Length: 281
Image (cartoon, rainbow, N blue to C red; front, side, top):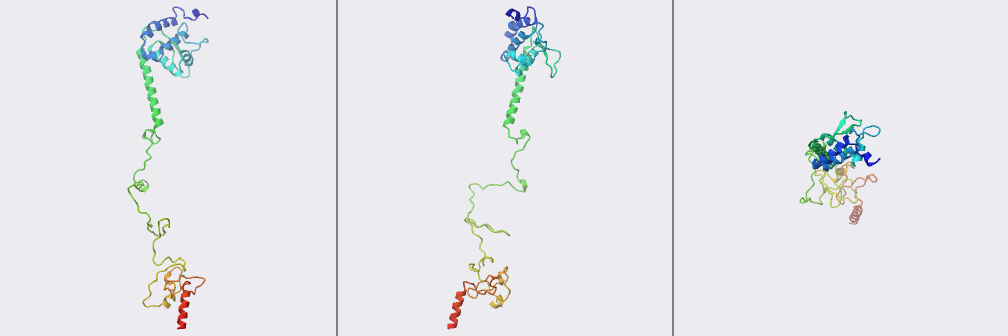
């Protein structure tokens, strides 16, 4: 088609719409609408409208938002907002009613007095709503999952939780004494680690070796003798019933291999020497 054939017919709706847009609307249009490229959308609608001002395809189907956005050089979201601002200004209307899932039919209107203030108010409201939504998403993204904003609670432990106070680590000014043995408790035995020693027990341990153990001599019975002390049957679990060595005067651990032992193995040479001296004398 030629340029003359593409131009709207004189007296048609697109012709009147184009004249008003170029000579009246754009010069008096607020700068906020120009920055939003509303006038660019209106020029695209004028070039696509039929003689009656309707936006239809060749098959008479209403033009979609996607087609209008492509002609205006914008994405669908911006094209929808600019089209709604034009409707608020009164230069575009919707034929019939809008229904979800159905393409609306838009019609351009060469209105003599557009309501540009209503169009500006609508775009500013949309901009503010989107900015608030963006800030909420940003806050939710940065917020920790346990913050009160997300309905959670702080992971800090309360005083006295689980039946006791929260653990406290010693500060740098607190100096604990090292190298001391821990206090003994019933059923416990202190560890023999570096810098520690087991508590001293008078008389040694009953389970120690009878050859290397150094037993503290036990007090003698006032009304008894050594023969009376050793006359009792030795009890491995009671060292007070063990016989006393006549040489070193210390207890002798019972040995099941030699139940009749009355002298320490280390004391036997000394006892033999003493007996020889007595016989020689």
